[in-house]
Image 1: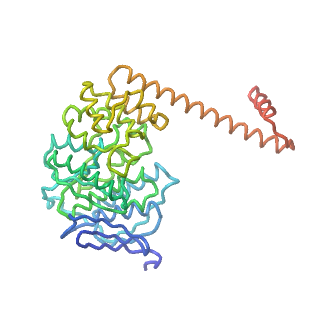
Image 2: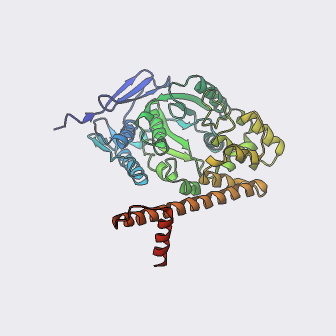
Image 3: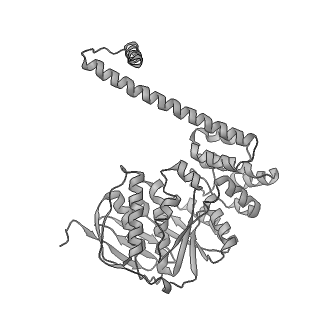
Length: 407
């Protein structure tokens, strides 16, 4: 008999909207003009949404709708991987499925394929390079409610116009989807790729056979950036037999992607949006950490005239790589800067990047040493206080520490 405190998930398919009632007070919605006359033989997308939510809340959920056996196993692996990456941040999902099916994959004969396109460097490269090799992709998906909040209208509309231009150039039909799924997150950095896969899985009901999304890093970048949700290992847990999802672009780092786009699709840079800070116009502020990284990455473009034209189209001005470092040097993380430096040509720009990495490593070692000494002094202070000595001066702590080191 079911406990009344445990909720049975309800799914509503409306014209232009799909709603998942997770509990009495919590629900997830997906809205798009493309969500019409939906037909689902399985509800793997809703199961993934339930896992994402239960990772945050630990709430026990009953799921009576049909889900595939592969999806249940995959999403269980996904949730376990996140809990290993960040044990303190996530709860163990408690999802009881009563209708697990083995699908007939051969019946999935749709010719519609979809990939995510946010308008940034990674997704634009992934879409452009993939379409050159595999022109079977027909649509691209732009999601509102992730980088741009649902109440941001002006900035997102500008971004949408930019992404439409990129989609048109690549011969893709743009679909815009709104969702509040991020309300169920406890960590955007770790859970956002699960949400991307959920939105792609949702499109199965609209007749799509498979999907794809862009990688942030190379395999080396995944190692250095961990824990991070958009990595190859997590991607392997989000694809299913019924709706395969490809992980695109991990063969190149950010600088190499910029160089590739400059050589093959330079006209797209006028539409690309990389900025994290500027959300009011959907463009690029030119000064934040991500804009600074992009400016540095442009140094990989060998033609100075083309490089200046691209930088002008992105930011409205041109700066030296030294200026790019000064813009936001403190917030350039070691892993991201290393990812950039790998693709930079030999010369002053690369030397500057590697020198900055060495400084960051030295600074981390210095901080680690300070913390280690602080912990040592704390132990000494507790010992002296326990022995009845109440007045603790820096001189006495240093003396006691020196005596212990001699021992």
